[in-house]
Image (cartoon, rainbow, N blue to C red; front, side, top):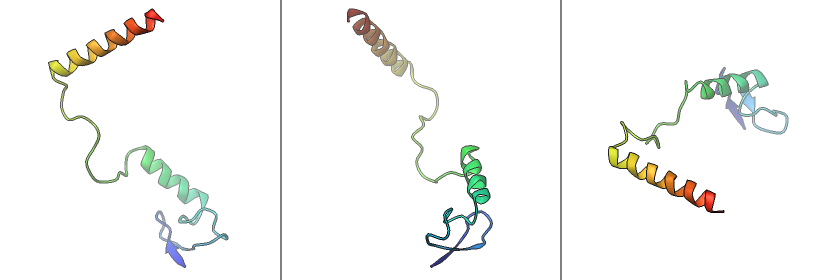
Amino acid sequence: MEVNCPTCKKTVTWGEQSPFRPFCSKRCQLIDLGEWSNEQMAISGESNQPKGKPSSADIEEIEAMLAQQSTDFFKQ
């Protein structure tokens, strides 16, 4: 089976003889990794990141949780 390298579109044979598959070379593999790490590429869909600023109720809940954790820590 043959596939196209996602980076340069060169034809790559899918098998043991192509250690960087689906990429044609280590160079193309690293270019792709760099694009992901620089957030130039992303998977579309819902983000797990919260939208907007946290509410004051959220902040109070987090502060209470942290206070309880520190109290529990010092009891040990």
